[in-house]
Amino acid sequence: MFEILLLIIVLLIAWFWLDSISKREIAIFTGRELASRYELQLLDETIACKKLSLARNNHGHMKIVRLYEFEVSADGRNRLLCSLELLGKQLKGWDIPPYLQPVH
Image (cartoon, rainbow, N blue to C red; front, top):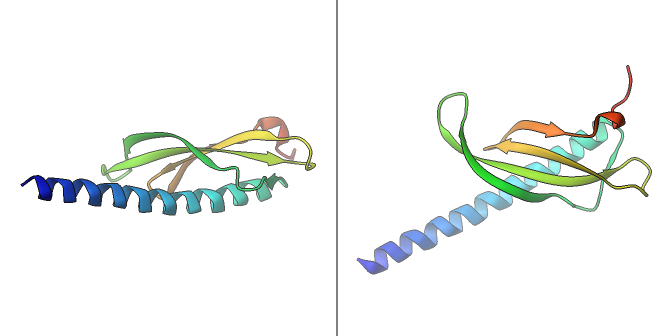
């Protein structure tokens, strides 16, 4: 019985680790996309997961919410802290300092 429980725990840890790697890749892609939208440069893979929580999606299913922080630069010298939030694979929200956004 103990061996089965241990195996289940190991499998859950392995699943979570692989899931976290795939979500980080999505966050890197999304961070680059957001940065390029505002003519900014995503700095050398600065994306890091800062917070994990649980929330329900639009269909009522429980998903892991991951908050990622990353740095961008407009001129290559100044670093600005930004963030994005993934609900499962979906972009739930993002924050780029407002003074960086282009005026239309």
